Image 1 (cartoon, rainbow, N blue to C red):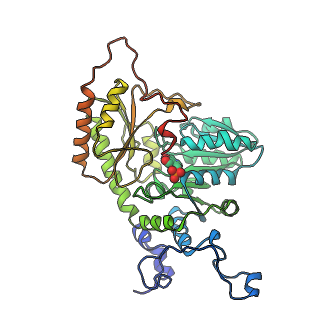
Image 2 (cartoon, rainbow, N blue to C red):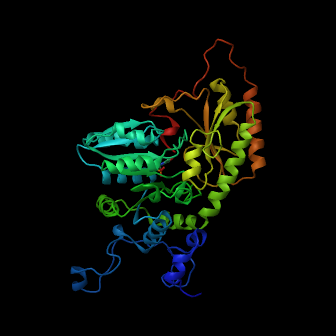
Image 3 (tube, rainbow, N blue to C red):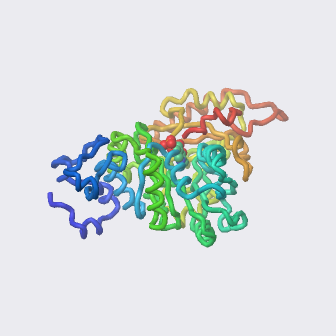
Length: 420
Ligand SMILES: Cc1ncc(COP(=O)(O)O)c(C=O)c1O
């Protein structure tokens, strides 16, 4: 096999890039995959080289051939200047925010943001003298009204990973850049394969590699890609925080990268098939999936995204909490747990009312989020069908009795949506 020339590499279509990027058979002694490089110390040939290091690797925390393979591939598919790797998606959010913000600054964060990102802003950033204002995810260019002279960062997440509002990221970016604010996006749902963050004006794009990049629910990883304007500062911040991911996790993530396009397309197919099936069910009030035409953000999704992944929510017609529990508890193919993007299907009840501050979450019934895996779709439907039968065996509340607006009234600090 001949070595890829720069010219061929530049001409490759995305699927070929995912298979070939970050691979160097010479470096891996002819083996297809680069082994996980473990190491702290990197040896120097002599004192002169120690004084003026010209070698590519200098210390394990500063990068290895394994981390370099993944970050360079991610940079390529994201259309970024560079990427840093950290041990979790939440660490990626924290590092990106710490890069953009300093004492006395103001942050605008979407009300639909991943719960622990809010907690980081409300606790850690607040302690550092950074104030956060939450905004309606559908605000678009209207975000200008919330900008202050010290607004230095705007965090977007599109779609929100429970409620699935689609944000007008280009409009938000235009206003933010005009005011000198950095635009961050949690792009975990779409991944760079379905939403090109930097081409849409995002300065730093966050990915919980824990989800679709891993694809197998067996690792935690975070990635932050940045454009030309922000990469240097991001690289410095992450480097000085000293939080590289473990080599095995990066190795597994690289393996996930090779099949990510295939898995994501299948997740899209399975997710849409299940979403459409839910639409036919009498128990379901509404399906919340951005790729369905009746989703309020569908037009923007169609304009900006090139696909949808396998994570979406449904709103059930009002039923008692115990009926929802009976539906979920007996599921045999859908696991009940946090996170998503693995090969296996998951279901989890959620309730945004406990933490929203800029918008009101009133879906009209209990809400459940599904991450659709690679099982046969007919088996998944049969599992859910049995769940609906269990649910039907519960008495509906007598008319006039209070109807359940959300699924469970778990205190916010313990709610399962705090993770995942
Ligand atoms: C949208 C989103 N961003 C970030 C994260 C954090 O990822 P991690 O669990 O790797 O910290 C999650 C995890 O569920 C998530 O759903």
